[in-house]
Structure formats: C-alpha cells, structure tokens
Image (cartoon, one colour):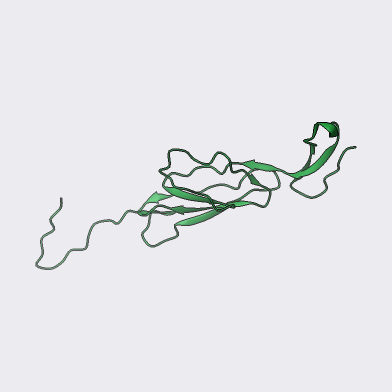
Length: 124
C-alpha cells in the first residue's frame, strides 16, 4: 500500500522492517541539525546544550517539522552589538523541511569612556 500524507510537513516514507517491503508510512519531514552560530550556545528541543566553543557541534539531533532550537549569544555579544539589547533568538523547522534563518551574535561595542572633570584617561 502507499500513503497519502495530507498533514503539512509530513511525507510518505518506506517502512523500516524488511517484512514490510513496499509499504509506506507517514513521517514528519526532517530539517537536519540546526546550524552552528559563532559566539552562541544552541539548545535543541531535547535539551542538549552545545557551547560555541565546543570541539564538536550537534551531529545526532535532528529537527523535525514543528521542532525548534533556541540560541543564546555568549557573554559580550548581542544580536545588534549594542550593550543591553536582545541576546537570544529561536529557529523552527518548517513544513518545507528547512529551518528558519539564524541570526548573528555581534561583539558589543561600548564606545569611548565618558570624560570626567579633573581626571586623566589611562589606557592599557
């Protein structure tokens, strides 16, 4: 038999058991592994954490339609590079079988320190 998977984000796939050769079942589309983002830690739906400085990024966790990943920029980084602004974002696995776009964590730029009367700026 064959399947007609009418739910968005699902598709027909072969059965895994050899005794069921030729038969199909419906399964969610797989988006794969969420993209690594420099200077960010990603938390995948099942709760595993992969810091940006990890030697290996996620390889076993795959997102499926409706699943998502949550990114948090490392300390000293925000989404805009401006201090005290947003530093986290999320992505989702779409019905097309692709994750939504990731964002970039930018180094915070503090600018020049304020001038103080009767003080001298000493830099290192």
